[in-house]
Amino acid sequence: MTQSTPALRLEGIVKAFPGVKALDNVSLSVMAGEVHALMGENGAGKSTLMKVLGGIYQPDAGTIYVAETPVVMSNPLDAKNKGIVFIHQELSLAEELSVAENVYLGELPRKSMGRVDWKTLFEKTDGILTRLKVNFDARTRVGDLSIANQQMVEIARALTVDAKAVIFDEPTASLTDAEKLVLFEVIDDLKSQGVGIVYISHRMEEIFKITDRVSVLRDGQYQDSVLTADTTEEAITRMMIGRNLDLSRAPVNHELGEIAIEVKDLSCGASFHNVSFQVRCGEVLGFYGLVGAGRTEIAETLFGLRQPSSGAIFLEGKETVINSPATAIREGISLVPEDRKTQGLVLGMNCRDNMTLPQIDDMKAGPFVSDGAEVALFDLYRDRLDIRTPGWRQTVGNLSGGNQQKIVIGKWLSMHPKVLIVDEPTRGIDVGSKSEIHKLIRELAAGGYAVIVISSEMPEVLHVADRIVAMYSGEIIKTFTSEDVTEDKLIQAISGITPK
Image (cartoon, rainbow, N blue to C red; front, side):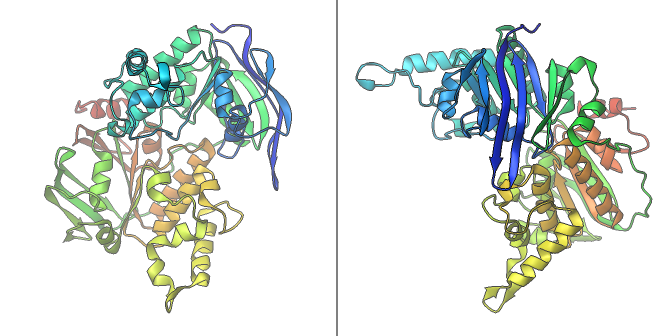
């Protein structure tokens, strides 16, 4: 039950940058003891609003109230001291330090003469970790933790202060289902203590599971706030993008071609075992399973990032040894990786240079790279994939998630692969851009590409895949066609139960 006092209130927030008004008179209130979802497409203004709230940006107009007291956030530490805590999607941890040092970074308990009080530090941290039900302790080196556990360290930071409001930005992007449940328990605990929660996520199932209200931004403007219990996914989507989405599964209306890739009894250490499948030209094969099922490891093996311990890979009927990414690219296999920001893009480079990076040697005019050839290639795939950017000089890190993903896809399409592997194609992408990526994947298949899609989202694989491979603990349990698959059968299969 939410309380009647706002934990956080924003009134008339305006923020402009050269050529664009990022926030246009945005007002929003988050009640004490409420979980309040903030939604909108990439570029809608959510990140800018949170940076204003966190003291990274100063608003051009408007007022921030914490517990009905007007405040000025001069910097992130000032915001934290005023009770506003952020759990960022992008990890900001010092990997060489311990968990405890990261949790209390900048606020280490001290003894006389400024010495760190290690005993107190470790005890306080272990107390927080106990609440989070994690399987590591305060002395663990952060760099030795999985990405999911590093995310839990970020969350532990929020529990070190007397928070008035906690902002969670896509907090479950790297968490397993079990870790998500722990996170939701933590959020429920904070809620019961009267803390206001701002929950930013593109995952509709989470929004309807844990939030009390939903507010939507579009093009820097506040649209509306609604009770979660009184709305639907369709209504929220309409507010976010200003139109309805067609989520129907388009039937395959083209002939499938020859087998582009076939895998026979492929194994890779403990990651996956005796995996066999084939993908035809014009087909989308989906891989679905829980975290750790071996899906990404299969993709990395096909791309030469891992070496198989047994089995064989056949391309167009010919057995092929893929011992490196360079070999995979030469043989016609491309991989759009799970984490586009760290594995697929150089965020500080411009759009053109990211697009042409794998084939830069082929674009030389003598000893120099041909600018004209690079720009022509970028323009071709910008138009083909509808990449929205002011021009090729735009830094990739400034693009929305959907447009970043299109840059990665365009980079590999420009290499004319036989097989395109797309791992988590819409992770961290808003619902409107998701629809565009799904449509693009279907169009690529219709154009004759053999496409492998790996996804943790059941609606996604059901929507885009012609067949779905269900994996559990490194093994293929069953392969479904789009005609015989059901959600129940798929859930059974990824739980290790062979459906009838």
